[in-house]
Image (cartoon, rainbow, N blue to C red; front, side, top):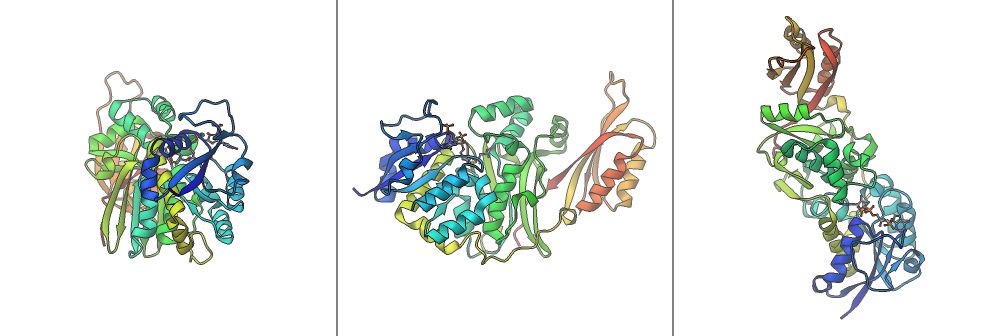
Length: 438
Ligand code: NAP
Ligand code: HSE
């Protein structure tokens, strides 16, 4: 049988999974590729570190040159995280004539234009299905399967670590630290988990999806974002009382004036598909004008789901499908027209607000009149009686609003925070309604 020699650079969580699929299930890859994908080399930084896969002798090396100088190796899975040396390694691989598969969204979100230009110039290809939502084939779907559509919106849970943390806190009452440690131990988190919990990773993935779906050349750092790192379990309890769950939602919607983009903890009505996504799962709701609503659900982080996407890309690259797609799509090229990104303050939405207020006469009137002055209409209010043993006379006041512009809601909350009957800073989160087909 014909053989395509491949290599892996970076043999951590994902790289080891890729090695296991190639070595233990070569029959599957051969059947789908019509040729054997032969793992020739696996490059690591530290040869002594234990690996989560058994490699035949002669494969493991700490010398990248053994891949670069071997012209028989055609396809390389580049699975080093972060920006450097990942970027330099990627450029060297392309320059030495390799097609590259990667799961590194940070690298693509930051250096996509440079890397794609270079690959095009060299007649090489980059495949990156695993870079967004792990095992869910969202890149292929958005960039190819929906190409007859004008996509109207993409809303999803794109970070498995954050979703794992909030769902373990919400449903099993784990502490934040306990849930984060478990997400790291399970291989879901980035080497620096700050990127997961502060919304960076989801914003990087959203920037890639917005590029594919809307041609938006947006820097991920321009996307308004908030993570789950400041989430208080008090808000999860109130959300649950109101019939909602809190999820880290990446949102992109094409409005008449431009493109709305944001990443933020968001209340979603319990029972809605996105509200029921648990643990390391991701889910993405796409609305296109022809296809209508489509919902994807699957493991967005973790060794084997991600390896599944990487190996599929390696097969597509070896058989020549990925290079054709790469050439046709012209991703991150100068051909794309930029889309107007709407400023955060223009985005309308419903809001959950929580204030800590002194339990005395007139408080509710002061708070609600400021909301009224800003044309923010109230949908419901919760205030419980103070705890019997609470000595500070403070109570939580939770308000759900009707739809209001972000700017008005934000100004009203700032004004309320200045009242002498309010203690500390308020919490404000968006409330998401179900996506609508046009
Ligand atoms: P990881 O476990 O930290 O593995 C990274 C690997 O890169 C390590 O094996 C490390 O080698 C290797 N490496 C670093 N610098 C190197 C160098 N200069 N030369 C050769 N190897 C080098 O990370 P991971 O979780 O597998 O993630 C890899 C990529 O996939 C990241 O971009 C991540 O964002 C992305 N991703 C991860 C998941 C997931 O669930 N984990 C899902 C989707 C996408 P040593 O072992 O020798 O230190
Ligand atoms: N750290 C990422 C996550 C890995 O938790 O979603 C998948 O991209």
